Amino acid sequence: MVNNKVIGIVGSYRKDGVIDSVITEILANAAKKGAETEKIYLKDSQIEFCTNCRKCTQNEGLERGECIIKDDMESILDRIDSSNYLVIGAPVNFGNINALTQKFVERCVGYAYWPWGEIPKIRNKIKTKKAILVSASAAPAWMGRMLTRTIDSLKTLADLFGAKTIGVIWVGLVNKEQMQLSEKTIQKAKRLTEKLIAA
Ligand SMILES: Cc1cc2nc3c(=O)[nH]c(=O)nc-3n(C[C@H](O)[C@H](O)[C@H](O)COP(=O)(O)O)c2cc1C
Image (cartoon, rainbow, N blue to C red):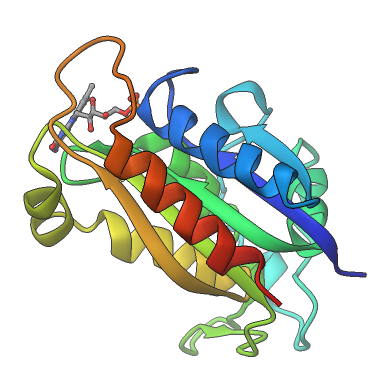
């Protein structure tokens, strides 16, 4: 069952850091528009490493394959599956999403059908959800976007969840422990929230 819910997935290690602040802003905008919102901190969740057993990828069908590891992933993915709007954020670390977010991505392999000896296929290619992607870097935003694999990785995650990416917010030049979001970022968050939850 899909509802009018926005889930924010914070892959950053820093609560109240840049990624968290942008996601807070979007969720607050969405709440003002009447959407139900929830924020998930990957850092606070019990997420074990994928073991590459690939059991979750073996059975054919549209439904996400069941993982053998019993931790918080099943509940997180159930909540994502039953929402129609996603905000997914991770910082750039060494040219790609940080390790915590990558650990989460690997545990999403059950959204693919991948028998041994074949190439993986995303089970459900119909995009019924919408997603905003969020990242931040010490490098200027244009450089981070163009020269790192971050957006590709976040987009892969959105694709696995059956979400069409409708926009990206990237904060560059992160050079202070605490940074206020700029007016430009706040305005972009507002515009993209409207696009996200527009009928
Ligand atoms: C281990 C590590 C690796 C990083 N690698 C990069 C990088 O490759 N490129 C870059 O522009 N910034 C890099 N940064 C800076 C972070 O992307 C930046 O501080 C980001 O804003 C953190 O997001 P947050 O405020 O949500 O914690 C790195 C920071 C750390 C701690």
